[in-house]
Length: 279
Image (tube, rainbow, N blue to C red; front, top):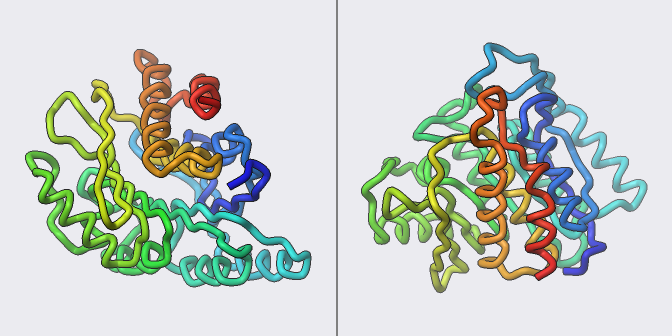
């Protein structure tokens, strides 16, 4: 795809806390891709560890109105990238995919709903079945291991699994309908953490050093960098590797600053990302 193509990202705005749209818009834009946004909700801050509470305003009712206006203005998109959304919004998103897509538009779905074996706050047990509807029409699905387990209704295994488990999980995601699977959080040894990339015929792996920290928002940083790199013309494996390296670089910029508990300092790593994209 050419650099001047337009991507629409659909996810929430957490006003404070480096995640969702406050990550997606600057990162995809830094990749040289025109980035339009559709906020699914507005939160005062994210719902992760470190904040005691948050405000929340749902924007589901605005979605069909915005789509109608776009159609009147003949606004359409070459790519879609979805993140944190609610169950009620998924039919609207599927409608946007159908009505506001240019020919050959790609759909990148990050099923942002769970981590560390648990669904995020506010999602009920039926939510993964609804999210599976987005995964089913995706060209690129980017779940972590927890999200993959919920999507498939299988047991989540935190560690000690083998390649056969990863291959079975990926096969299940393809069976749901995902054309390409980028499974994050894969690890076969304690010192390495990486991704498994599959186009349905072969699985390739890419690993980084595992840093001694877990930081909020890294999944959003990863998905945003992946989307940007892919639309810059990188292969799926190249985009997956660039995104992984960018996350590690962002984490390294954040290590040691205990006051920065709410996300990663991805802004300081953007020059690294831009440089990688030019190679």
